Length: 111
View (cartoon, rainbow, N blue to C red):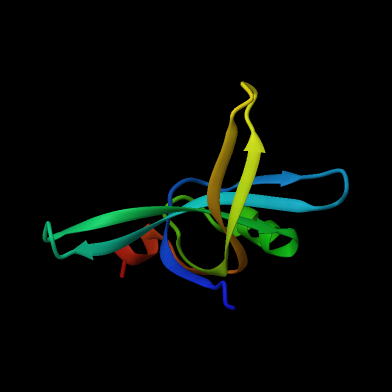
């Protein structure tokens, strides 16, 4: 069995990086990836939530910004929790194991 995800897209907002008392570090951010719709003949943007931990999280927190072009390698994971109102919530995320900074919007606009 294989659970592998590779994305290349633009970061939607500056990463949210948290440092825990245990010494762990977590960064979360979203990535927009365009795809072509043969039905509508338009580009459609899919948004993916990404979570990285430890050293990758520190690097992401320092270097990745809104608009950055990134490559993300990781796996698909399902997060489950109980909301304050008692309802069960499920959300798929990408657990990034390797994030590569490929440039920013500004870098691409200037050549």
